[in-house]
Image (cartoon, rainbow over all chains, first blue to last red; front, side, top):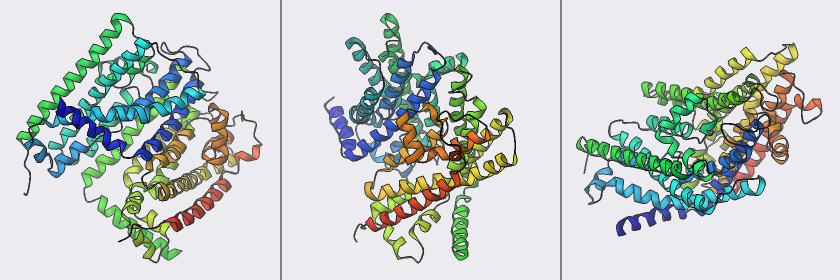
Length: 262
Length: 267
């Protein structure tokens, strides 16, 4: 635990070292937040309710999605894949610590930094201009828990497409495909509630919904009581399942690993 | 001028040959880009699954905006969108090399890469455009056809100017490619919907400061024969090519001052 904590501090420190990049990114998040908010508001000119969302829900959704964008690191992570390609993974494997545990701890240190410095500023910008919905204290607590689980699910998924580099020489194709699928099916591009029923059902049974749609629905109070416990349990189940798959894939990949030179 | 084109063609040719070395990888890359960008358009279709019209625009009319904008943006990005390479040169100081060569720096930056993968995106834009033409009821006149023909080069010039301004920002921010994304990718996203859906201040910013509205919105008002909800003078629908030329001049001047600002990294 002490070790995980130390690794997590490095995860935070890596990104905290570039405050200017964080501000630039928060600016860009805000610009995209405005555009998407206006697009959805235009949708509500003709209707008062879309898939159980009113206009306040939809606009809040947009700004929360921008806040989660970096927190769950949705735009793709390839550090592990690069280490596999250049052979540094051999060094990682010789350490008395599973690389997956290392990256999980690192990512759980990174995520709070991005939540605070890339998530909260654009959200405040949105709150300043639009009428957003705000949660009650218990819902806010559930939201934080749900975001934590979303980060773990996201890391579990990112770990998997990185480990693919053991089998594929050029991992970038897999990376781009995975990122695109995740952006679309997580609800980052549009709330899943706006999808046609069949497409929404498909998206709901995939793990991606746990990364964006579920935490935002928790914030908006769309799940209460036992239902809330259920969606959090589903998130936790996906986290465990993806991490387990990742661990199996890593040990399979390790068995066939050949590193040149020395 | 002619000689510069010959040199550009040689450099581009070498670059293309390099990309063709891994033929399968290249084909997969273009195909993947083509398919992936359809998910982007699927989002537009999903919006219209919920409403028949968005701010008075039908799905085919929005597709018209989307298609023309995607084609122009992809081609502009193909030609000058080399922000990563430039950022690397500025960080490591290898921009010096460009200053020593007997060609313009902007010319060299543009010639440094030609990522053909982006043709996949242009192709997707073209398909969406055909979809738009199939469904939108356009009363074709010589004027409208002329406007349509002018739209693509105008759009490329406008987006290329925006890209160059974004590249200039790198001279000051060094690692601020995310900041410039707001102007390039952000600007492109904005052109995909009719601008009157945006709030007033964002609209003014778009129409007057970053001239994305001229890429396809104003010309589209004329081609699709739509009422201008902003009530701007009709002339605005025709001046896009001149706005594009003016933007190019501004971008060029800004590039000059950006290069003058460059200090090198020593060594």
